[in-house]
Length: 325
Image (cartoon, rainbow, N blue to C red; front, side, top):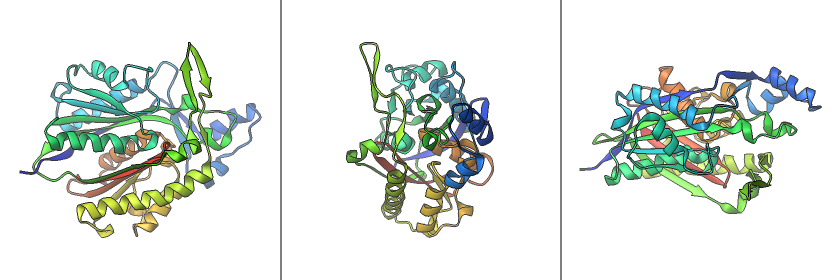
C-alpha cells in the first residue's frame, strides 16, 4: 500500500513591527540613501515588510507559527516525530534552530535539524520530510521556514535593503493513504554562488568577510524565471499532471515580476497565484509557508485543491512541489 505525506495544518507568524515603504524611505533618507514608495513598488511590488526586534530570533517566530499549525492540524507537539526548520538566519552557529524550537515546543526526543537552501529552503525541507514519511522513518512531521533577514541587510544599499523582511510559516505533515505530496523536484548550481550570498563567517571570535547580503539583481532575475518554469514542468510530468490541473500557484515571494512571468509561462491567470509579497516582502525560506497559510486561512485554498509550490534562492538553489491539499 502506497504511503503518502499530506499537509493537515498550516500556520504563520509575523513580528509586531510593520515597516511601510514610506517609513523605510524616510529612514534611508537620514543615511543619505534616496528611494521612494513608488520606486520600490514599480520594481518589486513590495509595499511593506515586518522586522523583528533585537530580542526576537528565528526560533521565536518559528514557535508561534508552529503552534498555529499544530492547532490547525488538531495535534500536539508530543505527536510530532520529526522537525525540520529551513532558515538562513539561525539563532546560533550551533545547535540547529530546529533543536531550539523543539525544546520550546516541548517535543524533545524526535529527530530535529535545519535545512539551508536560502529562499528554496522550505521546498527542500518539505521534500526531505516527504521522503522520510514515505519511507516510514517518520509519521508526523513539523516543517518550518523561519527568518530574521533584517539582520543581514546593508542599509546603505537600496537595491537590497528594501526587499527583505522577517517571518515564519509552518506545516504539519502526516502519513496518509490518500495522496498528498504528489511530486517534488530539487536542483542546485554552485557556479552561481556569487550572485546572491552573505560572504562572511566567524573565526576566532571575529567576523571574517562581510556579514551583509549582496546580490546581483539582474542575474538573479534572469536565472530565476528560467529555472522556476523548468522545475514546475518537471513536477507536473512526474505527477502525470498538466498546467490545467493546477488550482493554485504558491511561489516564493521575491518579486512580483518574477511571479507574473512564471504564471504566464504556466498559462495561469494571476487570480490563481497566492501573492503576499506586497505585505511581507521577501522572507526567504518563510515566504512560501507564509503565503500558503494566507491562502488556506483566507479560504482561497480548499481541501482537495492541487497546489504548486516553487522557490529559488542563493546557492543557486531551486525546486518545486506539487501536492493535493
